[in-house]
Length: 288
Image 1 (spheres, rainbow, N blue to C red):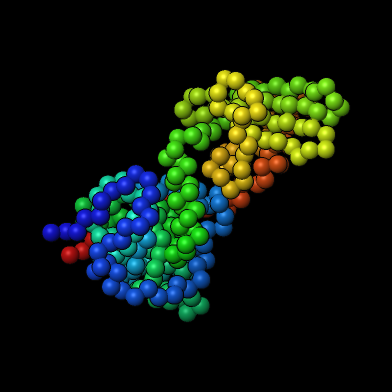
Image 2 (cartoon, rainbow, N blue to C red):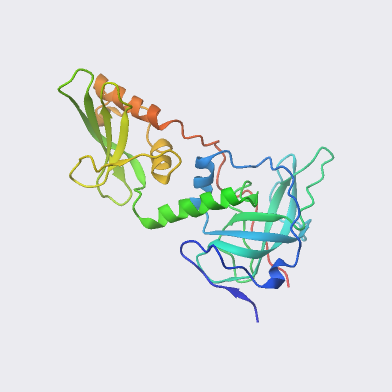
């Protein structure tokens, strides 16, 4: 009978796989050229991954038979088998072992890293009945790091809360000057995937730091949530809003367009490195 690891919809932080899954002693992982550069790269991967696990690699070898597809230059394709030691996200019950193909970075001699025993975080597709799955991208296998795991848990928790809108664009905006020189407030009406109201509020007051917040209701007041850098709300604004205010949303108003640019500048750059999320390797089959 196969050992089953129960599914979870949010985060499983303290439940380990059976002792047999931890029999392989973890070993140091070589420097990873596919490291995730920042919050946006991590969020892209987390939100695209049906399953996220901590695992220990028990086997890594050339796949037989050789799978279809071209291996990128500077890479060596390995068939990886790993024992799950902890589930962070899972859509369904899963066996204790997973298998996938990994285009590993090659060293100067064209050799892949010694992967057996690596303690990793893997971002994978929902596995088949035999445990075969695929990495969500070439960067979807990372050396386990407690800080990275904490970021993954935080992103999943925010996403599951349903409180952070999925921003799809901006439809309109207006600007009003205050009673004091240099004081103003602009409101930009955002479009969101759930169709509920979302308003980007930009407040400028002399001698104070510009305030950028998001309101979700029809009434916009001081309760609007300030945008915290390195949060899911920040990511969905900084990475998905257009750099310039569209003409249809009031972009022909110079002052309003300037407030839009200033608001995005206050958020800071998205920081996404541009890597595609689609896996370049096919799904592995779990043997025996």
